[in-house]
Image 1 (cartoon, rainbow, N blue to C red):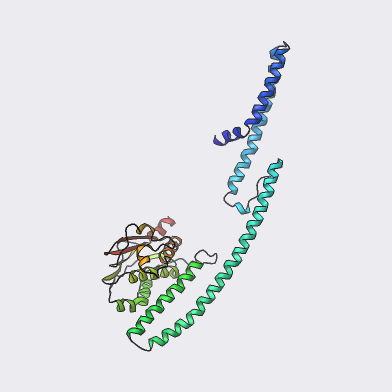
Image 2 (cartoon, rainbow, N blue to C red):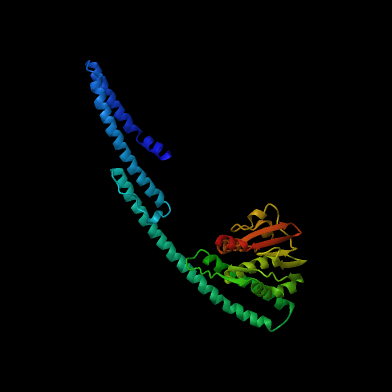
Length: 327
């Protein structure tokens, strides 16, 4: 009905003009004292034909409306219906020109994006060589200074990986390999990587095998686990970090760190948001948790956080969402 009312509103001027001329026709008959019925019958016949033409015109208008509604889902690949009037032809030509310009701009940006991806990919692989050389040199001696430098090297590697993930996140070539697998091997691999940091900071670490199996992508999930554990280490100066499963199909990383302010907690997964903790730590980028949320969305994993200032933070990964999607 809303479409019909919109159609009548658009044809309002034409209908008023028809009624105006019909009125002139009847008034002329009255002025010449001619039988009124002689004017009403032709007017009724004309009105009937006019009503039928109006229905046919509304039918065509509704077809065009449905085509245009369908075209909103793929605007760049859609051409408007065939034009009947001069203005419609002009609009159609304008749409075609805009589509051509959009394709040209899209092609240019894709070329620039591919070039940037190629550059940073090469850069990341090249920078791994001096990092590996530095690690080998530092591992030859066991001192407080060498351990500190190894810690900084691991942070550099993490930032390099973060850059690559950020660039690949929305890439058409991003590969996701979903298969059912246990989370414990991934957790042990992640924990081994950060073992020196636990020792250096003298933090108590508790790992309870979670026994969770989930359909997920190992590479991308490992990145999420590394980011979450890295954050827990970064903001826990003393106390403990614990990994456990609070309930079936859930994984929890809990620390006794500085916590997150209540006003910052709803925004920690936003891109570039660092909050009060980030402002205190000048090196915070605000990308780690944002990337975790984006990856979890693509892997259909729930990601939530609970925190209290000076008490600690609890991050929960919920793997039951994928099962819900399948059903």
